[in-house]
Image (cartoon, rainbow, N blue to C red):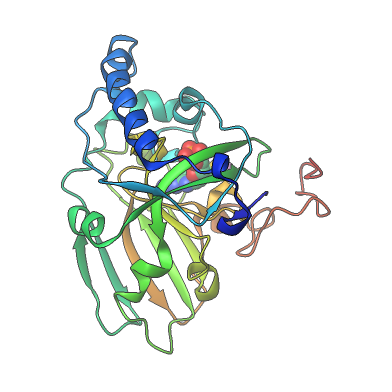
Amino acid sequence: MLIKQAQDLTEADVTPHSVYRARRRFMQAGLAAGAALGWPWLARGAIDLGDITPGPYTSDEKKTPYKDVTTYNNFYEFGTSKDDPAVRSGSLVTDPWSVSVGGECDRPGSVGLEDILKAHAMQERIYRLRCVEGWSMVIPWVGFPLADFIKRFQPNSRAKYVEFETLYDKTQMPGQRRRVLDWPYREGLRMDEALHPLTLLAVGLYGEPLPNQNGAPIRLVVPWKYGFKSIKSIVKVRFRETQPVSSWQQAAPSEYGFYSNVNPNVDHPRWSQRR
Ligand SMILES: Nc1nc2c(c(=O)[nH]1)N[C@H]1C(S)=C(S)[C@@H](COP(=O)(O)O)O[C@H]1N2
Ligand SMILES: [Mo]
């Protein structure tokens, strides 16, 4: 992954804020067009993400077009094909939404999405998300550091890992009727990975709230990890002393370890990772 730090960026690399606002208005105009084109998620009323400023890390790789980012997805709660989530995730209700935080911390509690958006300044960060299957995308995410979120709940000295859970509701997520994974979808990070400044809680992409198929209303983006670490539609965060078991690790322990990473020198059991 190519990561630039703010001090390496030239003027041209950073989108001026006024331009950003204008682009958001343009996207808004696109919403109506999207509805006409039969992309129903584009027509839905959207929460306001407020001002978005360029984050301290970004990439100058060519961005993957919005249409590809939102129509080629992995989200098994809506089916196992890449085109299922865009077609079938309309049943997910993301408003109201709250995230409950507990486990090894001094201030456990439940926090609503509106409060999360108010408490954190939104940044745009262009990150590449890489899937273990070999495909990858460069996406302009909107979000804020997971570390800032975590600190509010004051994890204690026993908190060595953070576990995340996706919503579990078969009526909203029809893919959960089939036992392709042990639901709800779960992921985990070691505390230092969770607190790393690159680890993002994302609430939007391309300046707009996340479409359902991309993990609305709030999902993880761990850019140096495979996509599978980037759990979607999070309802639960839990600080733990012991290492959590992620859904993919449980489903296929020989293929996905807890610390699986993108390493071109280590082949996946079934394919090369050289490129
Ligand atoms: N809840 C949930 N989160 C998930 C998945 C999933 O099936 N369910 N798939 C993961 C995988 S394998 C990938 S590659 C990324 C894809 O994210 P994207 O669709 O926004 O590109 O989401 C990850 N997060
Ligand atoms: Mo993936």
